[in-house]
Amino acid sequence: MTTRQTLTALRRAIALAAVMIMAVAVQAKAELHLDITTGNVQPLPIAVTQFYGEAVGAQIANVVEADLERSGLFRPLDHRAFIQTPDQLANGLPRYGDWKVINAQALVSGTASVQPDGRLKVEFRLFDVLAQQQLTGLAYFTQPDGWRRIAHIIADAIYKRITGEDGYFDTRIVYIAESGPATARQKRLAIMDQDGENNLYLTDGRVLVLTPRFSPTAQEITYLSYFNNRPRVYIFNVDTGRQEVLGDFPGMTFAPRFSPDGNKVIMSLAQNGNTDIYLLDLRTRRQTRLTDNPAIDTAPSFSPDGSKITFESDRGGSQQIYTMNADGTNVQRITFGAGKYGTPVWSPRGDLIAFTRINGGRFSIGVIRPDGSGERELSTGYLVEGPTWAPNGRVLMYFKEKPTGEGGRQRQVRLYSIDLTGRNERQMLTPTDASDPAWSPLIP
Amino acid sequence: MRMKYLSLCAALALVAACSSTPEKKAEVATGGTATTTTTPPAPKPTGPVPGSKEDFVVNVGDRVFFGYDKFDLTPEATATLDKQAAWLKKYGQVTITIEGHADERGTREYNLALGERRANAVKNYLTATGVDLARVQVISYGKERPAVLGSNEAAWAQNRRGVTVIN
Image (cartoon, rainbow over all chains, first blue to last red; front, side):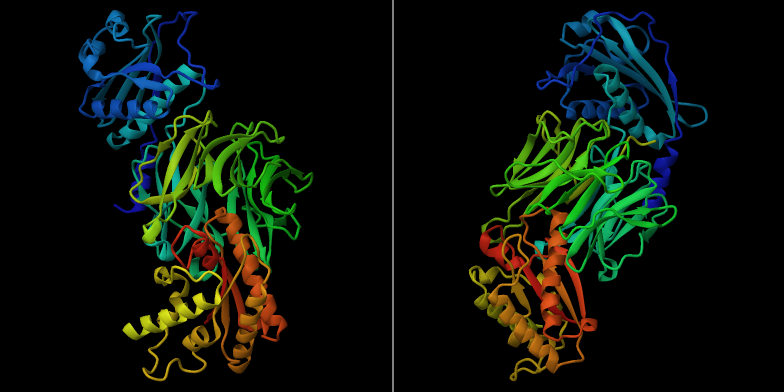
């Protein structure tokens, strides 16, 4: 199957219907709720049972369970401790005592059945064990190959019902897959689900590509390509596979990001030893210069409302983070700590800016408020770089590189995710070395 | 192929000899100077053909080195560039691409900009000494194409470089 066919098939699977299942109308007061805004969250013990019916039901439950577990906010319980069986759950109410006795606070049950028209119907229910009530229940219809997305959508529904925040499981990651020795590294555009499944390579590695970013609809990717040894910003259409150079600039363009409305791309232009930030309107193709300074101005990122831009500049003598209005006015420096700060990325919630800091020979990933207050370090290492936000603004992904060892041992670079609290650092499973991750919005 | 490899080693040994950190020569890899491997085989006993890419690499020196996060030219660098300019005047038909490179101790996009600064520092010096602007192109690779493997100062010093590539 080609990339295009696979992606089209995936997109077709999106044509699903969600139907609310009758839930108990009464809302209990002492309802199950996990406050994830505090520093130290105890993972919620949850029983995710196999979905009854089709064999795929067990796989769906596994994906739901893995999503919830990886968030660090849930602690799925061992299935061997379960007393009530999936068929009993499918054909009656939960026996709450059976779940309370194994310390489950939440219970997920479900069914998977094939409809006469060939579609798969997946139904799930989420129960509060202590309050003895159903919290939510939904049914979905999909083509059979859409089961994995349904599982992520169910995990998002559970996450949202219990934390009050939007989930981030029905999302994808675009990144750079790396292979070969550092001196002749092969880099390919690659895309995968946020749990590492459905990995696809979008380019073949003959041309150096870097720094991909999703459009707000996740249908397009903007990135840097060295096609014909002319490093320029391109757009890749995920549906058609079409690649197109962006703008007509006299020098290297790089560091592209979409505006929140998807109608513009901001990027850097390097020319005659000077790097400034430009805005390209995708509809009119008009180019606007936003910074005009002999310094390196790069790594721009829009605020979620599109009114401001954060970027890095060494205009003050070293690489630091600044904010400005979207028209280039009102430039403010926001980082003043020791060392250098770069790669600012505005949170989708607007409340924080994530960055890479280089200080004393170490790299770290941190966050800071847009006014420059509240700086916090989340992860540190020989080289950690390039944070990207999950769409709910609660989780970050970045790449972490281990140094080349003595005797030329190959360096290793992998993707990691971490909670905004600085806890729950997890390595992403990628087939090869990986860098430059960018998290998609929730798939429309 | 064997001859090419040997002459490449000779070139790199020369480079290492004029840099301030010559250690770990054995680990020098071919990526940063890969263009030299496309040279037609040189006649065996006589060394590089005058005016060839190999001649430039072996007898002139194709690269200059920079300090950490710096793009100003050291006296050592300008001495090398003076020799490059003289060679380029002698062989007035060749065009060049100047590659700017950075070590791995910076962020990717900043290093792309820094590499572009370094390539332009070399370009500006060469054109100021009389090399025709029309013969010169620049490209930055940031930290994407290290010449030397290694996560130590000796390797980084060799990777912070401007390389003049004969097209």
